[in-house]
Length: 140
Image (cartoon, rainbow, N blue to C red; front, side, top):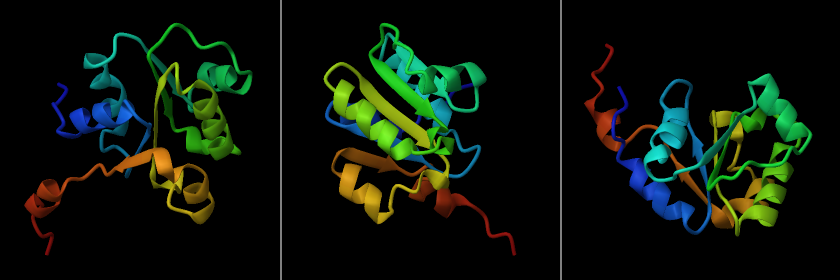
């Protein structure tokens, strides 16, 4: 069952103007948020998962992008030079497609070199809300 997450509308709004990065711990629903919930907002989504061999080949070989509105790069931070790749794709194709990049905390988007290059068009959404964090019971 897919939950309606409150961030979906904010992400969709930001996608109209910029690339969106979704980062957070493993297994909190980043991919679900990026892909399944965006299906309600976009008719055509091109989803690339770096962990999938065929998707990885398509990315490395720069295979043509099918007719789509939204491109999702999942786990792309595992690719060498991923930051330059994503920035280059966005710079060249931003007038044609919307972009979401998902991954673990290893996305490392807060480091200085990334900030200088791409932070002006990135929105970062954390996977935990304050409401969820305050509702967790103490383990003591």
